[in-house]
Length: 93
Length: 487
Image 1: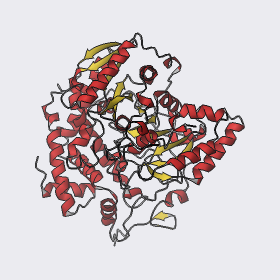
Image 2: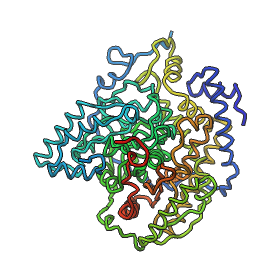
Image 3: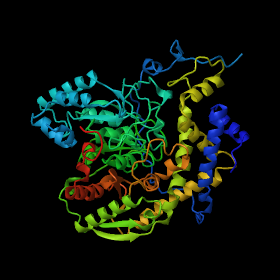
Image 4: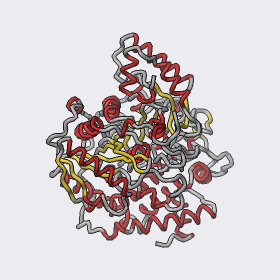
C-alpha cells in the first residue's frame, strides 16, 4: 500500500492531528512498512469464521445511584473553566 | 542487611518481626534510586515516608493488613493515583493529577503498601523499549546501553535494580512480560477481567491488563491475591477465586507442558533458545511431561494484535480533546483548533503513528481487509489455544525472541517493536494468563521463558514457575554480579 499525502491528510483529519512535513514523511514511511506486514492477514484462510462471540456474557449489575465526583474536582484538572463549566472558543456566531 | 536481595514477602516478614522498620526501608529505597537509570517518572519522597509511618502504625496496632504491609513499591505511570501526577510518559498528561485512584492502587493501599512513586514507561504504553517516553528512556540495569524493554520498562528496571520490591505494570501485547524477560525479573499478565482496570489509562481496552512485576513468582501470586477480583467500577472484571495454597510444594508431577513447535524458528536468538529448552528439560526433571503441540495461528498474532490494538487506541485516545484534562493549546481560536493543536502538541510521534494506523484500519475501504480480518484471526487464535489445552495443562515458549537490544537500534524499523511481541501478544488476544520468569543468561543478559495457561488458571502457572524457581537460582541473580552496576 502506498501511503501518499492525500491519504495522510485524510487520516490526520479524521484523527484531529496535524503533522509537520517531516513528521508526515516519516510517519507515512512507517505506515507503509507496517501495512505491508499486515497484508499477511489477507493470506489467512479464516474459513468464513464469524466475528468473535465466545467472550462469555458480560455480567450486568443493578443500576444503583452512588456518590460520584464533585464538579469542582473534575473541573480542577481542566485548563479553561468558568462558572462551573468547561470553556472553549465560541462555536456559534 | 542485604535488603536489596529480599523478595517483597521476605521484606514484609522482616517488617512484621520488627527486624526492619517500614520507614527505614522506604528511606533506603529512596536513597538507592539512581537518577541515571531513569526508572521513575515521579518519586514521592516525604509523602512515601509519611505513608510508611502510617503503615508502621497500622502494623504495630495489629491491624489485619497483608503479608506485603509496609513494603515499598511502585506503580506504572498509567495507573491513576489521586493527587499524584499520572502522565503516561506523555507531554499530553504532564501535570495531570487524577481526582481518583485506580482500584488496584486503592486495594494495595488498604493492604498497607507503601507507594514510593510512579514508574517511567513508553508513552501511553505504546512501545517495547521505553524510548517513546517524553521523560527519555530507562536503562537496563544489566547493561545501561540496552533497553529494559517496554512498555513497563521502568517497572522491570526498578525491581531488577533494587529500587522497588515490586511494581504493578500493564500488559496489552507483552508490556509486562517482555521487560521482565529483558531485566531478569518475574511478571504475570493475568486472565482478562481478573484484575480491575478502573483507573488504568486505556490503550486497547479489549487487551489491557494490570499485573505484578516482582523478584519471584511467589511475590507475584501474593500481589495478585491483593489486587484481583471483581470490581463494580469495571464491567469487564470478574471474581478471581484463585487458590494458590497448593502451589508451593515444588511438585509438577502429572503436569503436561506443551511446547508449540512454531516458537523455535530462525527468528529466535540461539542463546535464548538454548536457555528456554534447558528450562523445559528442568521442568521435565521435576516431574512434568513435555509434549509438542502445533499452533500455526501464532504466526498471525502480531498482525492481529497490531490492527486491534491500534484501532482501539485511535478510539480511546479520542478523549484527549484539550478541554477536560490534559494538554491544551491556549493559542487555539476555534473549537477545531482546540482539538488539533492540543493533540498535535501533546502526543509524541509513536502515539500519533498508532492513532493514524488505527484510524486507517477502521476507515471505509480498509476495515473489512484489516480490522474484520484481525477479529477473525483473533477468534481462530482462541480456538487454537482451546485445542492445545486439550492436550496439555500449560504451554511453554520463549518470552521474547532476543535478549535486550541496544537503545536506539530499533528506532528506524517500526516492525521490530511489534515483532518483539511475537510470543506474547497471543495471550492478550485470547485473554489468557501468562507468566514471564528468568531462565538464565545469554552473553550476560537475562533470558526469560513464558508459561501460558487456561483462563483463570493462574494457579497452575504459579505452581510450575515456583517449582522451577525452587530448583534454580536465575531469578536470584542481581545486576551487580553479572556485569551491571556494582551495588
